[in-house]
Length: 394
Ligand code: 3PG
Image (cartoon, rainbow, N blue to C red; front, side, top):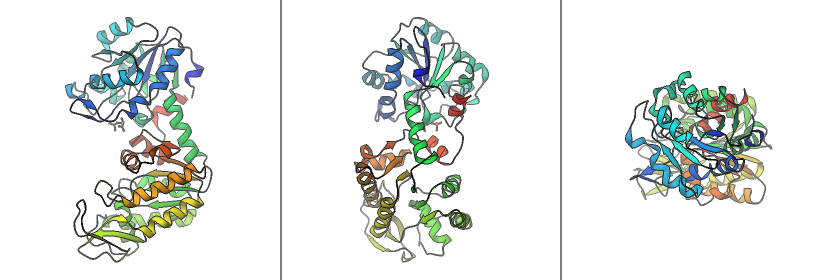
């Protein structure tokens, strides 16, 4: 794929697909990270004399105009991040968009209304892609976190005009390739979260690619069950035990060491501050549930980290939203941060929960790379081709 450096923007309208699908509460953006991350792309295009038209989705309006999902809400945060006024057109295609684009001068930035207000966006309808493409002369995709969607503004449009990756897209692809495509070995992956059933492809791909796989969260319980270890009333998918055994067998065949909790924090009820005890895995009583990994498990994870050169992290080790069951995730994150600061480990993390946990642990800044992507990060970890990236390659 090409980058901004390879393209001519002088006097041209650049259609820049960004992902500013940010959390909003009471009409205000509560986390502007994704907005701040697009600044380098906008500035570089401006420096090359271009006019920047931002294409983006917001929420899942399913092809309808849903006023609460208007991108207008992001304007103040966008203007603050860019340090300039940003224009707005209430439709991403048709007369309102054309008129607003025609009035632009080099250096201007214009945000177009939610692409998902049109059913053609998610259908990747060629007419929709053509209507978008007609607005500019160059397409820049800076939305890695939406690249797993083959939509008109992420995929279709790239086939219709000169296209390149934006700075954030470049950074994401480089960091992720360094972690899983061509990593320094040994590589350890942490996969946590509630359910094995939603991460089967991920586990299947990782056991082929990484040297160590740490399994945490609710999904670790399913693996414990698969090994005949009792987990009381813990969250576990007992019907997935056979599948879990297949994954363990595959890991053995590929030489990937799987690490499950050796000790666990258990409680009778799932609430913040619940009375709890730490026991060996297997000693969870019938009326108890596992809510976090224990300190021995954290030590084991720290030892694995110390032996590895690359870490990829997706998913928490425990019920992090309910303290004190965030302890193992926090301690493991601090260990990873310490090794990264010391230049011993390349650490890459992604997914909404994971990034929130690292922020809470105060170590997100120390990681080598934190992806802005949720679903796209997972699909990339699953080894899938991301249509938005593939379209830039052709
Ligand atoms: C995200 O928030 O992960 C991206 O913006 C993609 O959103 P989607 O899952 O609604 O396609």
